[in-house]
Length: 218
Image (cartoon, rainbow, N blue to C red):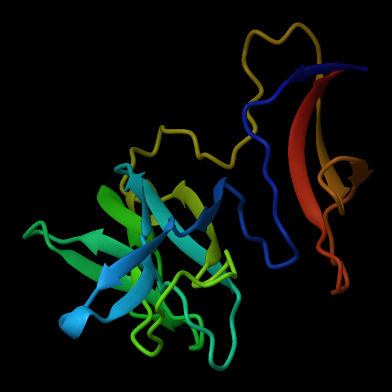
């Protein structure tokens, strides 16, 4: 048999989640700077870092996770955020997270497009310590953060599409095929090596199992 075509590959875990575009971004805050406060006091901070994220119409954004380093009691560093522009062009905080606090989600659900967001790390100023010179530790106030998003088709808008439209999770056999076509279900644990399998019941396991559907011409 020879490969025929892919209209779409359908990947899903045992919970039947359809995979889409995954955005994983690592961000670190900026350079250490000196700030003169009242009475010539010196305090130090780091500039923030912000990225833009646009969600097109017909798409939705799922926030899978935000990981910060370092994180723990007594840690001083930038706070992470995800913010969305509202109708008044002002920013609403969707997610906020401080190095020594838990993840705070203001809206725990999909963000529907079209939407414009920003995400990243805020500027931090250490208000608890005063130095006469720069600290020897170059990692002072340093914060790193990993954002994991998924952008996928909006199922709410998909239900409004004409009945003749093709689902984004369909494998289509065109009328101009020159031979019979096998529609195969395949599974993988690493999304690299795939083996053919049958529809049915699969036991839960600690290792994720991915599935895809493809058409192969005989």
